[in-house]
Image 1 (spheres, rainbow, N blue to C red):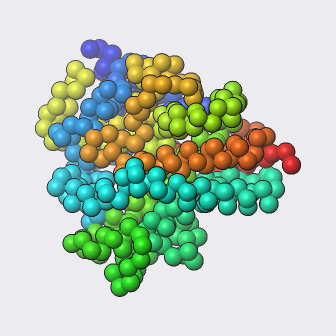
Image 2: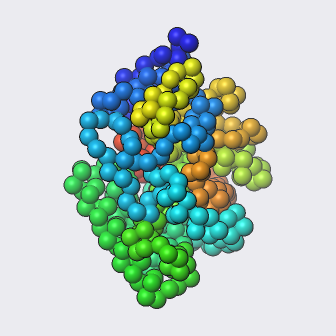
Image 3: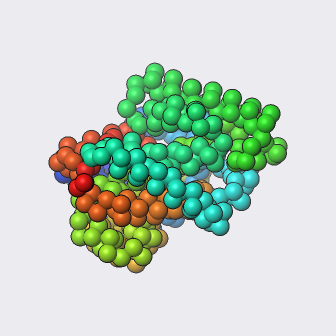
Length: 396
């Protein structure tokens, strides 16, 4: 098992020049040495980096590994528990207390009922783009507004608050603000959500937060749930729409195939999710000693799960570094796996399928308005990978 003792000293962040869609080269190299590597966390504590598909999937479904934030063992400092309601960083029974009331609100059938609304919002964005004329920044004109409007409507955010609400969330999710700016944006979002929950209790409307006020969840718990839904429903989809369009424009044969055969849309969404893996990593901590990939993960050790290399694992996917919209073998981990499988995955799929299809249909000559190397990428410190802006143009 010599190969599995490959060491990745610190988490690499830099992507290779000219390869904005590929994981950092050091992660790909680690996967070549085996699915598990030694790793030192940013706080100095030793841990493990899991880069192989099968091992990442197994850890996500293994109750011997915890998602609890306070158990993260990455340095000589204490990590506080996740705030009430922020169930992504919790285990059972707390995780189930928050997730179960939401499951029925995010079923595939209920999400499909939103398709017509997604189509209307997308058409409105495209109308505005066409009226403004090229060039436009696809991030601000298209990729952000679609998921923002949908998640705000689901949460019951008043129309007049949406612009400032998006700006606050964007600020603390972007990975760019200073620590002070990040705390300020996060605090402002929390305060707004607290006011929103209070308003829904007093005057319920037709939205998810109002429906949840009928449960035994406290205002503080509802605020935390709202934050998780907001972050997951807005930031990941917005970056998939912008980075996905960038990837399609850089792969003209695949874009032409999608234009020629609109029935490829669903498969294209799955392939872009796999290929881009904008949610790059997740961390879990071993509750007991666990044998994994021929190594012993000692109790209390935190492992980093690399989604982007798992979704590029050659043992799972043929030619994994190739964007192939005809790929039939799915099963990617872009939405996670196990108990924490993304609740909003069906909504995200609908938004992407509708948006990509409508965009390339409306603008057959869509192309980058700047050289690809001038497209500004989000820093790797951001939880969700993507582009800061995507200048595009078309023939008029």
